[in-house]
Image (cartoon, rainbow over the protein chains, first blue to last red):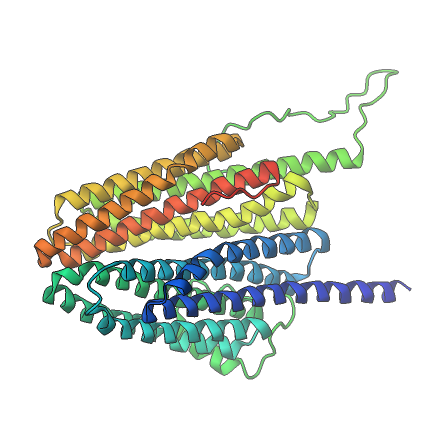
Length: 251
Length: 251
């Protein structure tokens, strides 16, 4: 009798945990939409789209608070075992990272609105291809991170670490190029500054994806990897990930 | 955990010391009374921990301002090194809050504050990251002339943000949401100061493009402090939420 009851309780708890995870992934999808819309608004000069991103940011914040409350309730009522507690905490942190990414998307939308506000749009299209390139990288990292989180997929998480170097490289290249515009025509400076802020925001979004990937590793391997050297980590885990199953046992 | 704070407010030292008077009754505490007292103690301990971490972060931000004002590269190094201590502290506080949630199963405002502690130690850590970012930017500006007017504007903005944070942390310690809300209103001033700085910087670079690289870094310093002010706002919001159960609309 106690076994059956216990089994039922554990099952319900797993269901609750899955629900929370699904809530986080839903929030993730919304943030991805925001990032894509904001970057698109910037590169295509779509005012209405930019305004929409700004308006929707509140909902992302609300989602974060809702998920956090659900998670804390879970911890307070359920007393999770070691692996579940790691997953629960990882989910909580990922909502924080997603909220920050959403915040950055809003900032990009503001850049779009400010740029559109100005008169001389002539040279801006020449700078916008940097935004497109950086957006493509950041967006992909975000997608990979969410895929990794969905299944606690270590390989996907490692993909994020492999590809995140492109972010800074592209940003540095963009900065060098943009500086030449400043010297060429000082009247473009205001726009250049807005583009720089948008590019920085995209890099930060990529960083948040990386942070989420770190959480996935944390859950799978039970080690806190937030303050380690990533190259060594990739090398070690690439060998190990095929031989060990994620979520194996308490630490 | 309490990082050197010596003042503990309010709590009487003796709960039912259980002196048996000859022939008289013993003071009786029910199990739930004991639990409530334990939760209260835990909650206050977490609050002190949070405020202790707050002091460390305020110190780091103060160092960042001094570092910029004095172009002090040694101080910059110190900020980066001390950041690790803050991260460690955050992890410790996090564990304590999690244990409190799982062990005491708090409800109502106890639940909200313990949950908020988890969120706020992350916010504080991110603020310390901004201090570290400012240190990095000062290092990047080494050896270059910084135009005095935008520098003063940046320092001014930074002082405003730090004052806001210090005040809101005090309000949190006093568990006084009104105090916090009054300070939260200063966030607008910081935003205005940032916009003014951007305009001034644009004008400056247009006059003398040689300043471009330094000026853009000053803008990023200002951005870091504007983010600090924003995060201080979050602390105020959480305080209102803890004490009233309502989520305030502060932006």
